[in-house]
Length: 441
Image 1 (cartoon, one colour):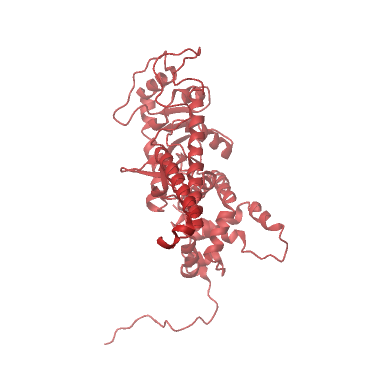
Image 2: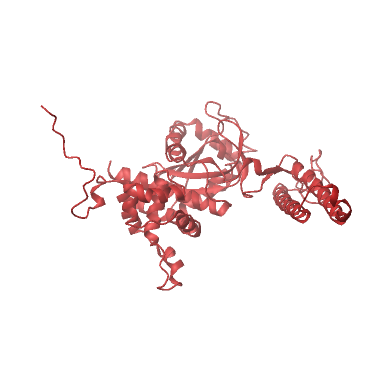
Protein backbone atom coordinates (compact mmCIF):
# COMPACT_ATOMS: atom_id res chain seq x y z
CA UNK A 1 0.00 0.00 0.00
CA UNK A 2 1.48 3.38 -1.06
CA UNK A 3 2.36 5.89 1.65
CA UNK A 4 0.07 8.87 2.13
CA UNK A 5 1.82 12.22 2.49
CA UNK A 6 0.61 15.67 3.42
CA UNK A 7 0.05 17.85 0.32
CA UNK A 8 3.27 19.18 -1.23
CA UNK A 9 2.78 21.39 -4.29
CA UNK A 10 5.69 23.87 -4.57
CA UNK A 11 4.28 25.32 -7.85
CA UNK A 12 0.95 26.22 -6.24
CA UNK A 13 0.62 29.97 -5.65
CA UNK A 14 -1.37 31.44 -2.78
CA UNK A 15 -5.07 31.87 -3.53
CA UNK A 16 -5.29 34.75 -1.02
CA UNK A 17 -2.59 37.28 0.04
CA UNK A 18 -0.51 35.68 2.82
CA UNK A 19 0.45 37.38 6.09
CA UNK A 20 4.11 37.08 6.93
CA UNK A 21 3.18 37.39 10.61
CA UNK A 22 1.92 33.82 10.32
CA UNK A 23 5.39 32.68 9.27
CA UNK A 24 7.14 33.61 12.51
CA UNK A 25 6.31 32.13 15.93
CA UNK A 26 4.72 34.24 18.63
CA UNK A 27 7.32 36.06 20.74
CA UNK A 28 9.90 36.23 17.94
CA UNK A 29 12.66 38.82 18.35
CA UNK A 30 11.57 40.60 15.14
CA UNK A 31 8.15 41.36 16.67
CA UNK A 32 9.74 42.65 19.86
CA UNK A 33 12.19 44.94 18.05
CA UNK A 34 9.44 46.19 15.73
CA UNK A 35 7.10 47.03 18.60
CA UNK A 36 9.93 48.56 20.67
CA UNK A 37 11.12 50.87 17.89
CA UNK A 38 7.52 52.03 17.38
CA UNK A 39 7.52 53.14 21.02
CA UNK A 40 10.83 55.03 20.82
CA UNK A 41 11.25 58.73 20.08
CA UNK A 42 12.60 58.94 16.50
CA UNK A 43 12.17 62.67 15.99
CA UNK A 44 15.92 63.14 15.58
CA UNK A 45 15.80 60.87 12.51
CA UNK A 46 12.78 62.62 11.00
CA UNK A 47 14.28 66.08 11.56
CA UNK A 48 17.07 65.22 9.15
CA UNK A 49 14.57 64.93 6.29
CA UNK A 50 12.06 67.65 7.24
CA UNK A 51 13.91 70.40 5.34
CA UNK A 52 13.75 68.43 2.06
CA UNK A 53 9.98 68.85 1.74
CA UNK A 54 7.35 66.45 0.35
CA UNK A 55 9.17 65.81 -2.93
CA UNK A 56 11.91 63.89 -1.16
CA UNK A 57 10.89 60.25 -0.53
CA UNK A 58 13.56 58.41 1.47
CA UNK A 59 12.91 55.08 3.15
CA UNK A 60 11.01 55.47 6.41
CA UNK A 61 13.46 55.91 9.31
CA UNK A 62 11.48 53.55 11.58
CA UNK A 63 11.85 50.74 9.04
CA UNK A 64 15.59 51.38 8.63
CA UNK A 65 16.14 51.51 12.41
CA UNK A 66 14.24 48.24 12.91
CA UNK A 67 16.24 46.48 10.20
CA UNK A 68 19.59 47.74 11.54
CA UNK A 69 18.79 46.86 15.17
CA UNK A 70 17.57 43.39 14.19
CA UNK A 71 20.68 42.91 12.07
CA UNK A 72 23.01 43.83 14.95
CA UNK A 73 20.94 41.73 17.38
CA UNK A 74 21.34 38.64 15.18
CA UNK A 75 24.97 39.12 14.14
CA UNK A 76 24.38 40.63 10.68
CA UNK A 77 26.47 43.81 10.53
CA UNK A 78 27.36 44.09 6.84
CA UNK A 79 25.13 46.39 4.76
CA UNK A 80 25.39 43.95 1.84
CA UNK A 81 24.26 41.03 3.99
CA UNK A 82 21.39 43.06 5.45
CA UNK A 83 20.26 43.99 1.93
CA UNK A 84 20.35 40.30 0.95
CA UNK A 85 18.45 39.27 4.09
CA UNK A 86 15.66 41.73 3.24
CA UNK A 87 14.85 39.49 0.28
CA UNK A 88 15.72 36.07 1.68
CA UNK A 89 14.93 36.12 5.43
CA UNK A 90 11.33 36.15 6.70
CA UNK A 91 12.12 38.21 9.82
CA UNK A 92 13.97 40.88 7.85
CA UNK A 93 11.19 40.94 5.22
CA UNK A 94 8.58 41.39 7.93
CA UNK A 95 10.45 44.37 9.38
CA UNK A 96 11.12 45.77 5.90
CA UNK A 97 7.41 45.52 5.01
CA UNK A 98 8.01 45.32 1.27
CA UNK A 99 10.93 47.76 1.21
CA UNK A 100 14.25 46.63 -0.28
CA UNK A 101 16.87 49.36 0.23
CA UNK A 102 20.17 48.76 -1.55
CA UNK A 103 23.25 48.08 0.51
CA UNK A 104 24.57 51.57 -0.28
CA UNK A 105 21.38 53.08 1.14
CA UNK A 106 21.71 51.02 4.32
CA UNK A 107 25.38 51.90 4.67
CA UNK A 108 24.74 55.62 4.12
CA UNK A 109 21.77 55.66 6.54
CA UNK A 110 23.92 54.07 9.25
CA UNK A 111 26.78 56.50 8.65
CA UNK A 112 24.50 59.54 8.35
CA UNK A 113 22.46 58.71 11.47
CA UNK A 114 25.16 57.01 13.54
CA UNK A 115 24.91 59.56 16.36
CA UNK A 116 21.12 59.14 16.55
CA UNK A 117 21.45 55.34 16.43
CA UNK A 118 23.92 55.46 19.32
CA UNK A 119 21.58 57.69 21.32
CA UNK A 120 18.82 55.07 21.07
CA UNK A 121 20.87 53.10 23.62
CA UNK A 122 19.69 55.42 26.41
CA UNK A 123 16.03 55.02 25.42
CA UNK A 124 16.41 51.23 25.40
CA UNK A 125 18.02 51.25 28.87
CA UNK A 126 15.22 53.39 30.26
CA UNK A 127 12.64 51.08 28.70
CA UNK A 128 14.36 48.12 30.37
CA UNK A 129 14.06 49.92 33.70
CA UNK A 130 10.32 50.45 33.11
CA UNK A 131 10.03 46.70 32.44
CA UNK A 132 11.62 46.04 35.83
CA UNK A 133 14.82 44.61 34.39
CA UNK A 134 17.15 47.28 35.83
CA UNK A 135 17.40 47.73 39.61
CA UNK A 136 20.71 49.65 40.01
CA UNK A 137 21.57 47.71 43.14
CA UNK A 138 24.84 46.13 42.04
CA UNK A 139 26.51 46.72 38.70
CA UNK A 140 29.75 45.31 37.33
CA UNK A 141 32.07 47.21 35.01
CA UNK A 142 34.29 45.47 32.48
CA UNK A 143 36.30 46.36 29.40
CA UNK A 144 37.06 44.45 26.24
CA UNK A 145 39.37 45.23 23.33
CA UNK A 146 37.59 45.38 19.96
CA UNK A 147 39.61 45.53 16.75
CA UNK A 148 39.49 48.79 14.84
CA UNK A 149 38.64 49.02 11.16
CA UNK A 150 42.33 49.43 10.41
CA UNK A 151 45.13 47.27 9.04
CA UNK A 152 48.12 46.31 11.15
CA UNK A 153 50.19 46.62 7.99
CA UNK A 154 49.25 50.27 7.49
CA UNK A 155 50.87 51.50 10.68
CA UNK A 156 54.35 52.85 11.22
CA UNK A 157 56.59 53.37 14.24
CA UNK A 158 57.98 56.82 15.10
CA UNK A 159 61.54 55.73 14.27
CA UNK A 160 60.43 54.31 10.92
CA UNK A 161 58.55 57.55 10.17
CA UNK A 162 61.76 59.56 10.54
CA UNK A 163 63.61 57.13 8.26
CA UNK A 164 60.80 57.08 5.70
CA UNK A 165 60.61 60.88 5.63
CA UNK A 166 64.32 61.16 4.95
CA UNK A 167 64.15 58.49 2.25
CA UNK A 168 61.12 60.08 0.54
CA UNK A 169 62.79 63.50 0.54
CA UNK A 170 65.82 61.97 -1.16
CA UNK A 171 63.61 60.23 -3.73
CA UNK A 172 61.67 63.43 -4.46
CA UNK A 173 64.90 65.37 -4.89
CA UNK A 174 66.25 62.69 -7.25
CA UNK A 175 63.04 62.73 -9.29
CA UNK A 176 63.15 66.51 -9.57
CA UNK A 177 66.73 66.28 -10.75
CA UNK A 178 65.73 63.64 -13.25
CA UNK A 179 62.91 65.86 -14.50
CA UNK A 180 65.37 68.72 -15.05
CA UNK A 181 67.67 66.45 -16.98
CA UNK A 182 64.91 64.56 -18.77
CA UNK A 183 65.81 65.83 -22.20
CA UNK A 184 69.35 64.48 -21.92
CA UNK A 185 68.70 61.10 -20.30
CA UNK A 186 65.24 60.28 -21.68
CA UNK A 187 66.58 58.01 -24.41
CA UNK A 188 68.34 55.67 -21.95
CA UNK A 189 65.60 55.30 -19.30
CA UNK A 190 62.37 53.31 -19.31
CA UNK A 191 59.17 55.30 -19.62
CA UNK A 192 58.17 56.90 -16.33
CA UNK A 193 55.54 59.46 -15.44
CA UNK A 194 57.86 61.61 -13.33
CA UNK A 195 55.22 64.15 -12.15
CA UNK A 196 52.96 61.29 -11.01
CA UNK A 197 55.86 59.63 -9.16
CA UNK A 198 56.70 62.91 -7.43
CA UNK A 199 53.05 63.47 -6.46
CA UNK A 200 52.73 59.94 -5.09
CA UNK A 201 55.81 60.37 -2.91
CA UNK A 202 54.74 63.83 -1.77
CA UNK A 203 51.34 62.46 -0.73
CA UNK A 204 53.06 59.69 1.22
CA UNK A 205 55.43 62.22 2.81
CA UNK A 206 52.48 64.43 3.85
CA UNK A 207 50.63 61.45 5.38
CA UNK A 208 53.71 60.46 7.39
CA UNK A 209 54.25 64.06 8.53
CA UNK A 210 50.64 64.29 9.74
CA UNK A 211 50.95 60.98 11.60
CA UNK A 212 54.20 62.13 13.22
CA UNK A 213 52.59 65.42 14.28
CA UNK A 214 49.74 63.46 15.92
CA UNK A 215 52.26 61.34 17.81
CA UNK A 216 54.24 64.42 18.89
CA UNK A 217 51.09 66.21 20.07
CA UNK A 218 49.86 63.17 21.99
CA UNK A 219 53.25 62.71 23.65
CA UNK A 220 53.44 66.39 24.65
CA UNK A 221 50.02 66.15 26.28
CA UNK A 222 51.01 62.94 28.09
CA UNK A 223 54.26 64.51 29.34
CA UNK A 224 52.40 67.57 30.64
CA UNK A 225 50.00 65.31 32.54
CA UNK A 226 52.99 63.58 34.14
CA UNK A 227 54.35 66.91 35.36
CA UNK A 228 57.08 67.43 32.76
CA UNK A 229 57.73 70.72 30.98
CA UNK A 230 59.69 71.84 27.94
CA UNK A 231 62.54 73.25 30.04
CA UNK A 232 63.07 70.27 32.33
CA UNK A 233 66.40 69.39 30.64
CA UNK A 234 65.32 65.70 30.90
CA UNK A 235 65.70 65.89 34.70
CA UNK A 236 62.79 64.82 36.96
CA UNK A 237 61.71 67.48 39.42
CA UNK A 238 59.80 67.37 42.69
CA UNK A 239 56.80 69.46 43.70
CA UNK A 240 59.17 72.26 44.75
CA UNK A 241 60.57 72.40 41.20
CA UNK A 242 64.03 71.19 42.20
CA UNK A 243 65.75 68.24 40.44
CA UNK A 244 65.35 65.01 42.39
CA UNK A 245 67.90 62.79 40.64
CA UNK A 246 67.91 60.58 37.56
CA UNK A 247 67.22 61.50 33.96
CA UNK A 248 64.37 60.94 31.50
CA UNK A 249 65.28 58.69 28.59
CA UNK A 250 63.83 61.02 25.95
CA UNK A 251 63.30 64.69 25.25
CA UNK A 252 60.05 66.38 26.27
CA UNK A 253 57.30 65.73 23.72
CA UNK A 254 59.31 63.20 21.71
CA UNK A 255 57.65 59.76 21.43
CA UNK A 256 59.56 56.56 21.93
CA UNK A 257 61.00 55.06 18.78
CA UNK A 258 58.55 52.14 18.91
CA UNK A 259 55.42 54.33 19.31
CA UNK A 260 53.09 53.60 16.38
CA UNK A 261 50.40 55.46 14.44
CA UNK A 262 47.87 53.92 12.06
CA UNK A 263 47.21 55.59 8.71
CA UNK A 264 43.70 54.13 8.15
CA UNK A 265 42.25 54.99 11.58
CA UNK A 266 44.40 57.50 13.38
CA UNK A 267 42.24 57.36 16.53
CA UNK A 268 42.87 53.64 17.09
CA UNK A 269 45.75 52.46 19.27
CA UNK A 270 47.88 49.33 19.27
CA UNK A 271 46.52 47.08 22.03
CA UNK A 272 47.30 43.58 23.21
CA UNK A 273 45.06 40.91 21.73
CA UNK A 274 43.61 38.12 23.89
CA UNK A 275 45.63 35.01 23.17
CA UNK A 276 48.73 36.96 22.15
CA UNK A 277 49.72 39.51 19.57
CA UNK A 278 48.74 43.12 19.00
CA UNK A 279 46.09 44.90 16.90
CA UNK A 280 44.89 48.44 16.26
CA UNK A 281 41.90 48.47 18.59
CA UNK A 282 39.61 50.36 20.97
CA UNK A 283 38.85 49.69 24.62
CA UNK A 284 35.06 49.16 24.87
CA UNK A 285 33.51 49.54 28.33
CA UNK A 286 30.24 48.16 29.66
CA UNK A 287 28.42 48.58 32.98
CA UNK A 288 26.04 45.65 33.54
CA UNK A 289 23.15 45.57 36.02
CA UNK A 290 22.89 42.50 38.22
CA UNK A 291 19.11 42.05 37.93
CA UNK A 292 18.84 40.88 34.29
CA UNK A 293 22.31 41.48 32.78
CA UNK A 294 21.15 44.65 31.01
CA UNK A 295 23.99 46.94 29.89
CA UNK A 296 23.19 50.28 31.55
CA UNK A 297 26.22 52.20 30.25
CA UNK A 298 28.36 51.66 27.16
CA UNK A 299 31.38 53.89 26.64
CA UNK A 300 34.56 53.62 24.60
CA UNK A 301 38.12 54.91 24.77
CA UNK A 302 41.32 54.53 22.78
CA UNK A 303 43.36 54.13 25.96
CA UNK A 304 44.26 50.51 26.65
CA UNK A 305 44.23 50.96 30.44
CA UNK A 306 41.00 50.68 32.44
CA UNK A 307 42.41 52.49 35.49
CA UNK A 308 40.68 55.85 34.90
CA UNK A 309 37.35 54.53 33.55
CA UNK A 310 35.31 53.94 36.73
CA UNK A 311 34.28 57.59 37.28
CA UNK A 312 33.38 57.93 33.61
CA UNK A 313 31.21 54.80 33.69
CA UNK A 314 29.42 55.90 36.86
CA UNK A 315 28.78 59.32 35.31
CA UNK A 316 27.31 57.56 32.26
CA UNK A 317 25.02 55.42 34.44
CA UNK A 318 23.75 58.53 36.22
CA UNK A 319 23.26 60.38 32.92
CA UNK A 320 21.33 57.44 31.45
CA UNK A 321 19.13 56.62 34.44
CA UNK A 322 19.34 59.65 36.75
CA UNK A 323 20.66 57.57 39.61
CA UNK A 324 23.87 55.92 40.78
CA UNK A 325 24.05 52.21 41.73
CA UNK A 326 24.47 51.12 45.32
CA UNK A 327 27.53 49.03 44.54
CA UNK A 328 29.98 48.65 41.65
CA UNK A 329 32.28 45.68 41.08
CA UNK A 330 35.42 45.80 38.94
CA UNK A 331 38.55 43.74 38.34
CA UNK A 332 42.12 44.75 39.12
CA UNK A 333 42.48 46.72 35.89
CA UNK A 334 40.39 49.49 37.51
CA UNK A 335 42.60 49.75 40.59
CA UNK A 336 43.73 53.34 41.19
CA UNK A 337 44.39 55.27 44.39
CA UNK A 338 43.38 58.52 42.67
CA UNK A 339 40.06 57.03 41.52
CA UNK A 340 39.37 55.51 44.95
CA UNK A 341 39.98 58.95 46.52
CA UNK A 342 37.71 60.68 44.02
CA UNK A 343 34.81 58.26 44.60
CA UNK A 344 35.34 57.78 48.34
CA UNK A 345 32.57 60.15 49.45
CA UNK A 346 30.04 59.08 46.83
CA UNK A 347 26.92 56.99 47.44
CA UNK A 348 28.31 54.01 45.51
CA UNK A 349 30.30 51.34 47.33
CA UNK A 350 33.37 50.23 45.36
CA UNK A 351 34.62 46.65 45.36
CA UNK A 352 37.70 46.52 43.13
CA UNK A 353 40.24 43.70 43.02
CA UNK A 354 43.82 44.63 43.93
CA UNK A 355 45.49 41.83 42.00
CA UNK A 356 44.77 38.94 39.72
CA UNK A 357 42.47 36.21 40.98
CA UNK A 358 44.34 34.03 43.46
CA UNK A 359 47.18 36.59 43.69
CA UNK A 360 45.53 39.41 45.59
CA UNK A 361 47.90 42.02 47.03
CA UNK A 362 46.29 42.97 50.34
CA UNK A 363 49.07 44.75 52.27
CA UNK A 364 49.35 48.49 51.64
CA UNK A 365 50.83 51.39 53.57
CA UNK A 366 47.83 53.35 54.96
CA UNK A 367 49.90 56.55 54.91
CA UNK A 368 50.88 56.36 51.25
CA UNK A 369 47.73 54.69 49.88
CA UNK A 370 44.94 55.11 52.46
CA UNK A 371 42.05 54.42 50.08
CA UNK A 372 43.73 51.35 48.58
CA UNK A 373 44.40 50.07 52.10
CA UNK A 374 40.68 50.47 52.89
CA UNK A 375 39.83 48.56 49.71
CA UNK A 376 42.18 45.76 50.80
CA UNK A 377 40.39 45.56 54.16
CA UNK A 378 37.02 45.47 52.39
CA UNK A 379 38.17 42.58 50.19
CA UNK A 380 39.27 40.65 53.28
CA UNK A 381 35.82 40.89 54.85
CA UNK A 382 33.16 38.23 54.24
CA UNK A 383 30.85 40.84 52.64
CA UNK A 384 33.58 42.08 50.31
CA UNK A 385 34.55 38.59 49.17
CA UNK A 386 30.89 37.61 48.62
CA UNK A 387 30.28 40.76 46.59
CA UNK A 388 33.36 40.38 44.40
CA UNK A 389 32.53 36.74 43.64
CA UNK A 390 29.50 38.03 41.69
CA UNK A 391 31.60 40.21 39.35
CA UNK A 392 32.52 37.58 36.80
CA UNK A 393 29.03 36.24 36.13
CA UNK A 394 27.58 39.77 35.94
CA UNK A 395 30.18 41.59 33.84
CA UNK A 396 31.60 39.03 31.46
CA UNK A 397 28.58 37.32 29.79
CA UNK A 398 27.49 40.41 27.76
CA UNK A 399 30.98 40.84 26.30
CA UNK A 400 31.07 37.12 25.56
CA UNK A 401 27.72 37.35 23.77
CA UNK A 402 28.82 40.34 21.72
CA UNK A 403 32.00 38.65 20.53
CA UNK A 404 31.18 34.95 20.45
CA UNK A 405 27.42 34.79 19.78
CA UNK A 406 26.79 37.93 17.73
CA UNK A 407 30.27 37.70 16.23
CA UNK A 408 31.04 41.42 16.61
CA UNK A 409 34.83 41.47 16.74
CA UNK A 410 35.66 44.47 14.57
CA UNK A 411 34.12 47.90 14.11
CA UNK A 412 32.71 48.98 10.75
CA UNK A 413 33.31 52.68 11.40
CA UNK A 414 36.52 54.67 11.75
CA UNK A 415 37.25 57.49 14.15
CA UNK A 416 36.68 57.62 17.91
CA UNK A 417 33.27 59.33 17.86
CA UNK A 418 31.85 57.07 15.14
CA UNK A 419 33.19 53.92 16.78
CA UNK A 420 31.77 55.00 20.17
CA UNK A 421 28.32 55.41 18.58
CA UNK A 422 28.56 52.01 16.89
CA UNK A 423 29.46 50.40 20.23
CA UNK A 424 26.29 51.85 21.76
CA UNK A 425 24.31 50.52 18.80
CA UNK A 426 25.73 47.02 19.41
CA UNK A 427 24.92 47.20 23.13
CA UNK A 428 21.39 48.48 22.44
CA UNK A 429 20.79 45.55 20.09
CA UNK A 430 22.07 43.08 22.70
CA UNK A 431 19.85 44.68 25.36
CA UNK A 432 16.82 44.27 23.09
CA UNK A 433 17.66 40.64 22.58
CA UNK A 434 17.98 40.15 26.34
CA UNK A 435 14.75 42.07 27.05
CA UNK A 436 12.86 39.90 24.55
CA UNK A 437 14.18 36.72 26.17
CA UNK A 438 13.31 37.93 29.70
CA UNK A 439 9.81 38.95 28.62
CA UNK A 440 9.01 35.40 27.48
CA UNK A 441 10.99 33.40 30.04
